[in-house]
Image (cartoon, rainbow, N blue to C red; front, top):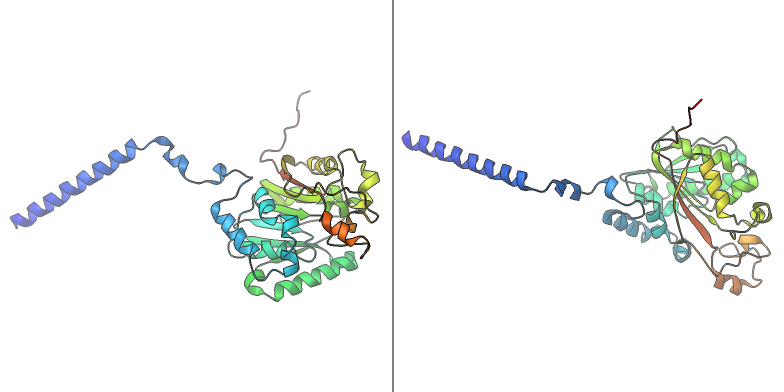
Length: 305
């Protein structure tokens, strides 16, 4: 019995020593140690975590992507573009009018397990093109539930758009669509709806065909090209702040003065075989890449009398 009591005492003393040692180590640890842990606040918005980069690589390499779409990566720089917009696989992302689904093939699988991908499409009765695009995208998703099975749709009226509950999205993306809204005179309504659906701190990512800085909007809007300053004004008028811009999708070969506007260039080749080799050598259009943020705290209005 005495031996058992001695063993128990020794065990207690050992535990106490270990506890004191652990406490001393914790007290000796520098206060900045906790800051070394990765947090959203410490990750720059223009870069992605290694995990996100690996996930993007896997999505880009996926055999579900069509060969024609993969061939255009050299012009569209999807990995660098999405990293610039700060995408993460656990976000709720709304892609505006994804058309045939070029970016959908990347985004929907990337967000399939831990995030939410939402394709915002115009209501089918808004145009024949909208109906065809929606039907094609639905067929694409239905044909591969393993990669697209969790993708959702939201149909919107372009003149009075609503994309979801206020503050429900982390990221809204639009690729080569603003010029269409300019011609339809719906840009202000679209930007306001983006602002509403994004959470405070959420990001609006815009890619579109870029006109020369000196170009007047009325002179170029039917060409498909837009002055960057116009796009910035439309977004900031809706409440966004321009956080950064990038030359990821720049193309200095693009002279922006073609018979059929931007659609003269690939992939459309509006002139058919006429000078096709020339336009193929130019490649796809010169594009602006803009990242806007919805402020966490809206700009204060003056209350002075």
